[in-house]
Amino acid sequence: MKKVDDKTLLAFCLTGYSQTQIAKELHMTKTAICRRINSEAFQELLAEYRNKLLDGVLTELLSHSQKAVLKLVELMDNENPFIALQAATKILQLSQDYSVQKDLLRDIEIWKQTAENEAIYNRL
Image (cartoon, rainbow, N blue to C red; front, side, top):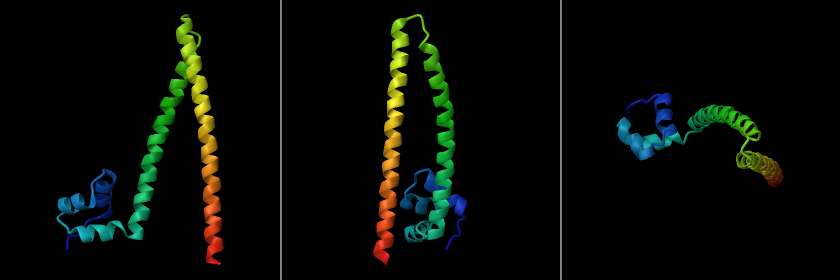
């Protein structure tokens, strides 16, 4: 059987290839790919790389978001009252969206903690 390193397999997984496609590309059986991908060690590695990718994307998004907000603040002083009003309205809308997201994240954390506590209780 052909030995494939983790980085090669990760590259296929992170770019959206299915297990069948990966097996075909690497000239391996689907069973071998499935077994390897579903191993605990590989799943941990995959999660680590996904988190790194996500962190990079979020950092880039945050950078552009800050620039966009600064532009909106600048536009609030525009001579055209319609443009100034649109900018102010968008800032208020974004503030409200952020507040709702914070509430949802807090609720998710509460539900997660409750589920973990129930799982611990059920094991006793």
